[in-house]
Image (cartoon, chains in turn red, brown):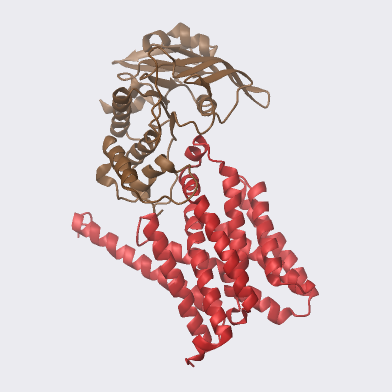
Amino acid sequence: MLDAGIFTQSFMIHAWIGGTIVAILSAFIGFFVVIRGSSFAAHALPQAGFAGGAGAVLLNINPLCGLAAFAVGGALLIGYLGDKERNDVITALTLVATLGAGALFLGLTNKYATGAYALLFGQIVGVSSDQVVATAFIGIVCLLCLAFLYRPLLLASVSREIAEARGVPVRLLEICFLVVVGLATAIIVPVVGALLCFSLLIGPNATSVYLTSSPGKAMALSLLISLVTVWISIVLAYISGWPIGFFVSMTGALLYACARAVHYFRVKNIRLKAGIIQC
Amino acid sequence: MISPVKVKKGDAILSIENIRVQFNQRCVLNDVNVQVFPGEFIGLIGPNGAGKSTLFKVILGLLSPIQGSVRVLGRAAKSGDRLIGYVPQKLFLDPNIPLRARDLVALGLDGHRWGIPLPSKVRKKRVDEMLKAVDAYRFADSPVGQLSGGEQQRLLIAQALLTDPQLLLLDEPLSNLDIKSAYEVVNLVSRIGREKGIAVILVAHDMNPLLSVMDRVLYLAEGKAVMGRVEDVFRNDVLSGLYGYPVEVLHVNGRIMVVGGNNSGINGYPLECNCCKSEAAT
C-alpha cells in the first residue's frame, strides 16, 4: 500500500531520480523521433541495447556498458548502411540480428529469469546509486548534444534538400542523432525495459502533436506528459508490485486516446462553427 | 546579420562555363553555358531527366562538374552559400507535425546554425516582415502540415529570402499547384525579384505561366542547353537541334506547346503535356 516509504526508502529515491531523468530525456528525443518519422529505428535500438545488456549479464560486467555498446553500435550500423530508400531494411536487419544475439546470450547465461525480465520489462526499483549517477551523466550528455543539433536537425527533418543547400552535413547529422538515441536508450531500457522503451519515446510526443502546433509548446507538453506518465507509473508499480513498463505503456496509450478525442471534438467544433458539416 | 553584397551593374550573378557532369559514364550535362544577371527572371524549361535538378545541384555546390567552371558573384560555387536562396519542389510533412508557418520561415534565417534558437525581437520582426512580403502573414500561426500546396510554397519562398540572397533557385514550384496558385506564385516571385533586384531561376515543365514574366529562357534537353529570349529559343530549328530529332513549336492562343515529330514522324505527340492545364484556365 501507499506509505511514506515511497519517498524515503533509498531504492525508491533512486527510482524517482532515475525515472525523472529518463522521462525528461525521452520527451526531447521523442520529439525528433516523431517529426523525423524514425519510429522504427527508435524501436530497433532498445532491442539492440537489450542484446548488449544480456551479453553483459553473461560476461558478468555492468549491464549499462553492454546496453550502451550495442545500442550505439546499432545506431552507427543503421546510420552508415541505411540511406533514404533502404533505411527500413537495414533497421529491420539490425533489429533481428541483435535480438538473435540477445537470445543466444540469454540461452548461455543461467541468470535467465531475473536478468531477462529486468531488461525486457524494466526494473525501476533495482536502480543502484552508481546507476543513478551514470544515468544522470549520460542523460545530461544526450540533452546537450540534442540542444546542439536542434536547429539543423529540425531543418533537415522538415526538408533535407534545403538543409543540404544550406551546407548542413545532413548525413553526419542523421548519424549523430541516431547515436544520441542509442545512448539515451541505454539508460531508458533498465528503467522501463527494452520492449516498452518505445512507448515512452513515442507516446508523449504522439500525444502532444494533437494538442498544439508550436514546436516549443509541443516539447513542453511532451515533457509534462512524460513526467506525469513516469511518476504515476512509479507510484502504481510501488503499490501493486506489478512491472512499471505495464503502467508506462498503459498511461501513455490512455493519454494518447484522450488527446485524439480532444482533437476530434475540437476539429468537429471548428467545422460546425464554419458550417462545413451540414446536418 | 548578413551584410549585403555589392553587385556592379553588368556583372553576372551566375556564370557557368562549359560544364560537363557525368554519373557513371553517363553524361547528364554537356558543354552547358549559362550567364545570369542581377534581377533577371529565368525560366528553366525541359523534359524530365533533362538535367534541370542536376544543374541546380551544381549551382548549389553539391555536385562538382568534371570540367568547366561555376561562379556565383565571381566566387566558385560552394554549398551553404548565403547568396543563393533555394526553394525545393514541395514539403513532405506529416499533417500533424508541430510546426507553424512562422517556425518554418524562421528556419530560413538560422536553421543551418547549431544550437537552440533564442527568442529575440529582431528575429521575430524579420520573420513577420518576410511573412507579410509573401502574403502569408494571415496564416502565420497555422500548422504547416495543414496548409495548401500554394500556401506552403509561399513559406518556402519566404524562408529562402531570409538570407538576403542575390540568386533565387526554385525547383518546380508550380508542379503541385492548381492553375490559380501557380500564377500567384509566379507573380509573387517575379515581383519580389524585381523589387529586391534578385535574379530568379525557376524550373518548370510548362513555360506558359512564365511567359509574361520571364526575361530569358534556359531550355535543357538531352544534357544540352540553349539560352535566350522566348522568341529565339522556342523555334523549330533551335529545339530540334537541341533534342537531336525533329520537334515542332506550336503557338496556340498566345501559348506555346512543344511537340515531338513532324508530319512524317511521331505525329503530334506532346513533349510538354502540361499545356492542357493552362488551356483549361481560359
